Amino acid sequence: MLWNDLEMEINICSKCNLERTRMNPIVGRGNKKAHIMFVMDDISEVEDRKEELLVDKDGEYFRKFMEFSKFDIDDSYFTTLSKCSAHGELVSEETRLLCSEYLMAQIALVNPKYIIAVGEEVTNYFLPNEKITDIRNIVGNKYSYMGDITIIPIYDLSYLFKADSKEKWKLVSILKEL
Image (cartoon, rainbow, N blue to C red; front, top):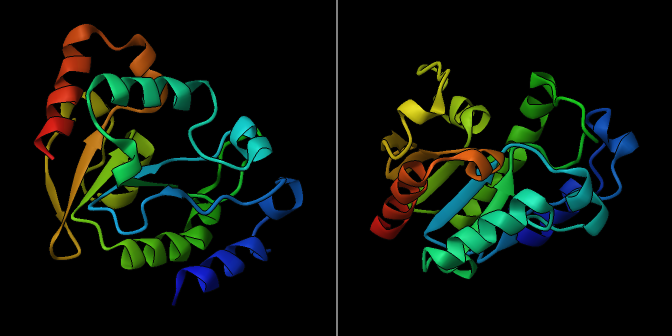
């Protein structure tokens, strides 16, 4: 599958009820040949309206945090578990399962060395046997995934607002190692 095919499939997708409420699905953003792929949980209403990831309050803060960390986000690829906004509602496991083929296709196309699992939801998706209940206990740990891909869990974007300086510096050091 090629990027154009994947984007077309996502744009015409009607597998779940989010198709009725979304404005436009969002495939992802960034370098499609990146060594680092960030996977976030869901698309916010603001991102849905603006048709781009990382443009809401959490995303803007994250981009500033990355800038401060001297981490070039343009060298990474960003995507989500689900490709449509649930407009504030929780995205069901069934919906995530229906969207998972798109995420797997993105992983195959990007072929990253690292997948940064942003938050507990995403970490539990990639590491279902770990049963994560507090992401703070495993931030920065490395897990093997699909052969030569390394999964690295980090805090949820919204948690960065309230994280203490020690937690923020831990994240900076994790990112600098990559």
